[in-house]
Amino acid sequence: MPATSRRNRMLAITTSLLIALVAPNAANASQKIKDQYPGSVLYQKPVEVIPHVWSAIGATAPPGYENSGHNNNLSFIVTGDGVVVVNAGASNTLAKALHDEIKLITKQPVKLVINENGQGHAMLGNGYWADQGVPILAHKDAAHEFKERGADILDRMKGYNRDKAGDSRVQLPSETLEDKKLIKMGSFEIEVRNLGPAHSPGDIVVWLPKQKLVVSGDMAFHERMLPIFDETGTADWIESWKNFEKLGALYVIPGHGHPTNMAQVRRYTRDYLVYLRGKIQAHMDKGGTLKDAYYVDQKPYAHLDTFNELAKRNAGRVYEQMEFE
Image 1: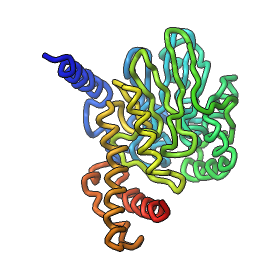
Image 2: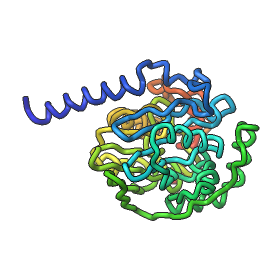
Image 3: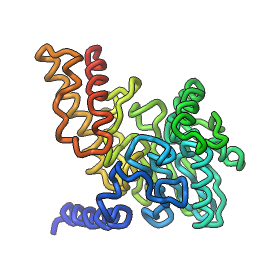
Image 4: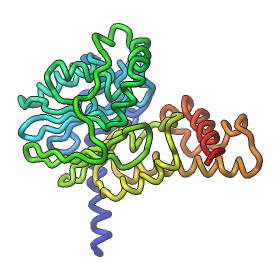
């Protein structure tokens, strides 16, 4: 058997085992399930994706009281000389719940928290970690975004989370990066990298080159439709995706959805962006208006969670972007 065929076969087997481990039932990814871990404000109990790399998988629904705002993935690496956490959580309450789970798994202290971007689900738990004396790392653009919009982001979270918001506050990271930071801790080499403009300002990925695993943040989505914000440059995201592919990741812990492989996140991220832009371009070529752009055909992605909440909004924002490209 040729080497390429053997590698593809091993990739398929490895991915099947990974999916069997963290997502044994397709219903696990349904946004209709309000909470899968009633004993905690976490939506799901952390699972070990590969040895020493864990993730508490968030809901694929929008943030709300039922899921406590835990609708993204909160991951951590047990390095042998301390724990690195990826995402502070959407509140101090969630940050503490994740820390409680980490303490059940290891006696190693948390030594670093990394914010994947400047959104609330990545940064609103920073206050808890700062109070534990843990340094917090983010991209400089994410830190700027949180500084400028943090008060509004906090107010929105308190609006849906009410008593579950706890004593959350706007807490900026203690350290920022611009392009790349290398971290050696225990048996792990960890690369924190900005691969270019993507979903939101200051998006980063956490790349483990020896393990071939990437914690992608919102560079990549799985099982739920990605949202396109006013600040999301879809053409730039597609271009930055090339750098993401160059990592050669075998395992992907996406920003949203269960851990999977590159083929799946490519299908629901890069391919969706290309598809939607193509539909909008065809609509514009026919003289179509913004009013009608909301209704371009997105049926190939209608099975994704949050489709009903986001599809029309995404189409409108892409139309508005492409008018000025």
